[in-house]
Image (cartoon, rainbow, N blue to C red; front, side, top):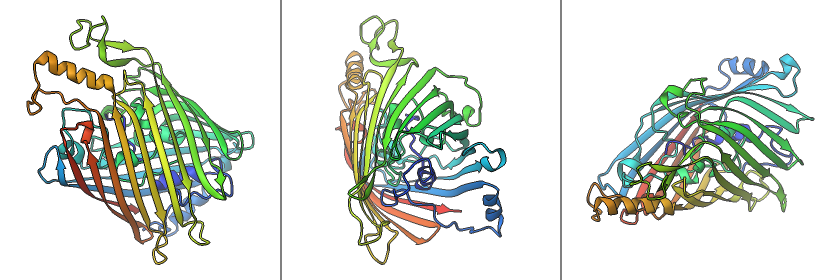
Length: 451
């Protein structure tokens, strides 16, 4: 499930979200989770940062680590502290001042990821089924340095139309309305990555996208992107090649960022279509079950995926627009003949600045319901039947997944401007969708340092 890596952080979303092409001038997304980048630990770097900014080069360099400890339950009860971390560099070079091309820029992202330690697959979940959530959302399956994106962008029609082209990532254009503040994968950002046909954050493919602002608050987005199952492989980390491509992705999204009762909100609805070949999760080419069909599993020459979400500020704390309560909801619906994650629904509440003494602290609570594909479950049952296995404890048994529920509560504080500490707790009901797996508790700690 390497294609469901949702690793974009709050500070990068802030850079994307607060561009002049993204929002109306009186729209303030701070309480929605889109904070402006904090003052970095290195400051002005003896004037170097100021010189770079004067020449149109802006960047964000940050360090992130995520720790998870299985406090109880799960598939494997042995205690384990899982640790992952990464360095990320996101940069933007303004070209307008040098070329005169309106809003022209080069955009880039490089991520160095280390300590490939995944608590979900090591302790929480039965390893005989595909995972559908992660206790450490930034786990990407590898310790590696790779290019997330390198693109050229410019605007037309008085900055209402934005065009982007190059080695890109979907988070540059699509599904930007919910931040990635929770440590649970299912609560991190929107649900577009559940399509399992494209990647998030630190994996690039070729493509081009257009975003048009129909009104100051409503945007239409579309694109043509490479569908390459090999994109997340080590050999593709810095590759310009399209080797391994299976087809194209055609994403379309409508996004709205209105003010409701004077409070900002963000809403979206997207559809992704691909003509890349997909393998059926149960049916064979000759009409019988795929596991016994001499011609193998049926192939589909296309598939679809839908996602939607909302993120709305509910209250404002006294007269401070940067403090208050917000709520978010996101969902995805997939073709369950080709995608083992059929439906996902996630809801959350966030409060920024609950305490007067800590106006920049956050409290967050989220719940996620995940429904696995009945075709995937059907295939698992069929494999057990033809293998004559019915004992769950038998290593040859194929667990039959249904639904799972995961939840998280966190508190994030900023003791100094450049440091964020976020302890929290997670609860896992039916990890991986397997009812035979004991419910689990996880203690977490996320740390972010901005340089």
